[in-house]
Image (cartoon, rainbow, N blue to C red; front, side, top):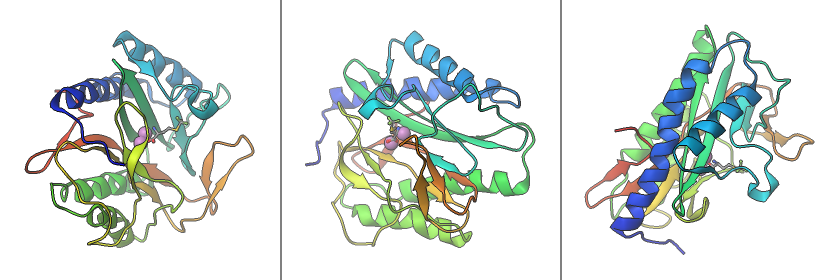
Length: 250
Ligand code: MF3
Ligand code: CO
Ligand code: CO
């Protein structure tokens, strides 16, 4: 069931999503060669709490950290670790959900570490372009399948693929709500978007084939072929004539 939010609820989701956007601005200068992903986890945790919010990934189905920090071939749910030290030329996606006053905001960015090559920067740009092309279609009356299709079509333009096993989602008092929003779809199919829906569109991009593998820790998802991956996500609301990005700093 897709929950339509009242303007008051949208305002609360906006506040939670803004915490995450602000956190990215604060943490970005610290993303450089030599720092551990655990160090970034602790910084993000602190920034979120300073805003009166809670990092709600911590403990979610037993997830052991406050952020997902996924480096290079790790596409999702990379567990921050003291032993994982960022190196020049890595790319890292940081995916964070914050809970504030009973509502969630969720966003993800992929950052370059130090000096990256063309190949790395291109992966980052493709995830962003997939998001931009998908969100541009969002308005009341549109089939969700149109939005989903735009992500895979954009990735395919660059010879990239999208995973089948993981999706975007509705968001509200819960981190994950209906509708589920795959990174691929068939135009003209799926639920119809309505004003007041709050959703997370989150293209996950794989450099080559879309086969994934979960590591023994039960969380870390990697590209089977070891190719690079990138991820970009915003929380948005469907408005009267389009959409508004909620995970932004104003
Ligand atoms: N923020 C993620 C999403 O985009 C969910 C994180 S899974 C967790 O849906 F286990 F880390 F919480
Ligand atoms: Co997320
Ligand atoms: Co999400």
